[in-house]
Structures are given as structure tokens and as C-alpha cells.
Amino acid sequence: MSVLVVGSIALDTVKTPVEEHADLLGGSASYAAVGASFFTPVNLVGVVGDDFPSAHIDYFGSRQIDLTGLQTVPGKTFRWSGEYMWDLNTRETRSVELNVFEHFNPVLPAGYQSAPYVLLANIGPNLQNHVLDQMQRPRFVIADTMDLWINIALDELLRLLARVDMLILNDGEARQLTKETSLIKAAAKIRAMGPAYVVIKKGEHGALLFGPNAQFFSCGAYPLEDIHDPTGAGDTFAGGLAGYLAAQDHGTVTFESLRKGVVFGSILASFNVEKFSLERLRTLTQADIDERYASFRRMSQFEVLA
Ligand code: AMP
Image 1 (cartoon, rainbow, N blue to C red):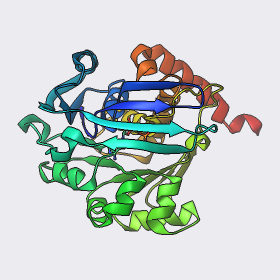
Image 2: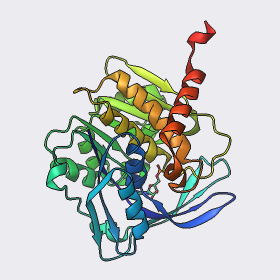
Image 3: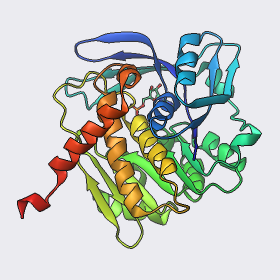
């Protein structure tokens, strides 16, 4: 089963305490689509300007990513710039240039409208809603969001939450959205807003998955010595999770497959942060993923302690 991914496609400038790189391939949909493509074919919906390097489009095409839904329009591509503090956890946005994104109208090609699995990667909730308006009856819809939309587009976000099966957000955003300190209470409140499942990401401390009937799963983060660029970790996580789910399609989504999807999402994200932009994903192999999955599994097995 293929997965439909919609989100931003960007040229990023990223500064860490030791390095700075400009005009990198970035954007929530770029990371998410490539992440998902390790598991299943992807249909990508997004917009770029006529300055967008054709090499990046070729790269998407070299993965199993269908580009019928990618619009190239006159003007400049969306640009984002961010700077990480010494802990690589705290980030400040230095600048955002919407450019062609300002008038982006995501139009789904006919063949995409019946997609069973949908990942609404981070973009304005008005655009995420607009994509859902064009869909028939997706089996499972995952949405990602960010603090900006909780601040400036809360009503649209709440409208979206009533229509999705899973929301992915980080711990700070979950607290901001619900005004709860406890992440357990926050997840319950978010589930009451619509999505049956909620994933709360805790950066270097892993992720929590919540579902109906008190279903709960805590996934650690793979221990990495060197992180070079955390940008896109969340998007790659979401892409890996969505791609894994679509690949496992059994007609319904089970908590078991969601648990495993969270583990594969975490593994994909752990590779992504090892290099700038999508550089690590470019050379990643199935064998690398399998090896890290096996070692992550050994690390997480409690039974051996009994
Ligand atoms: P993450 O590190 O997971 O928060 O995602 C970072 C990516 O999100 C970067 O590649 C940016 O280009 C993209 N991004 C940043 N701000 C926005 C925004 N307001 N809307 C859509 N994408 C954004």
C-alpha cells in the first residue's frame, strides 16, 4: 500500500555550535517522504519554486516517490533557517520565507484521492484540512503539527483533530495544547479532541504512544554518540511510522503494528540526525535499518532481567 505525504519542501540553512550549512534540502514533506520510502511507495504533494535544484527532484524520483502531486511554480522555494544551542535540543528559528508556499493550494491528483494511508506532515492546519477535503475514505490519517499552529491557528487545528486517527507532537507542544503538565493527562485530553492515537515525542528521551482502552507504549531513543543535525528528526520519525504501517496493511491498524511503527520511526530518525539535511538517508540501506532494529530490540528487552 502506498502512503500519501503532504507537507513543506524547503531549502534550509542550519547552524549548530560547530557547523553551518546553507541551502540544504529540507522541509517536513521531504524528510517524511524519504523516511516512508524505505518501507512503501509514496505519493508526494507539495510545492517548490523554479529555483529548486533539479538534482533534489531526481533524488525523490530515485526513491519510490511519485511526483505527480509536486507543483513547480514561478518564484522562490520556501526557505527556513534555524540555529541549535549547545545541547542540540534547543532550537531558534532565525528566519522563514514563505515564498511559493504563501499561495500553495495542495491539489490531489485523481489517483491520490483514494489513498488508504495519509501523512499530513507539518504545514498549516488549513492546508491539512484542505487535503482531507479532497480524500475519499482514508483508512488511517496521521497528522503532525508544531507550536506555531497552536499559537496562530488553533481553531483550524482543532477542526483537523476531529478528522485524524493519530496526532504526533512533541512534549512541549502537548503541554501547550492542553495546558497540562502531565504528559499522560495531556495525551488523554488530546485523544478527547479526536485522534484515537497520540504520539508524544520527547527528543533524545524517546516517544510515548497512547491509544484506546489505556493502551500505552514507551519507546526509548537509540543511544547515539554524535548528533550533527537534529533537523527533520520528527518528520523522518513520522514518515518511517506511516510508511511502516502502510507496508503492513492488514485491512485494519492494530496497536501491535503501531508499536512497531514507532520503533521503526525512531530508528529512521536516529539515522537522519547523524548528518546534515537528508545526507544520511541517501546512503542508508535496508541492512543498516535491520541491524539497528536488532540492536535496539536487544537493548529494550526487559525479560532478560528476570
Ligand atoms: P523538525 O526538525 O522536525 O521540526 O522539521 C524541520 C523542517 O521543518 C525544516 O526542514 C523546515 O524546512 C520545516 N519547517 C520549519 N518551519 C515550518 C513551517 N512553519 N511550515 C512547514 N515546514 C516548516
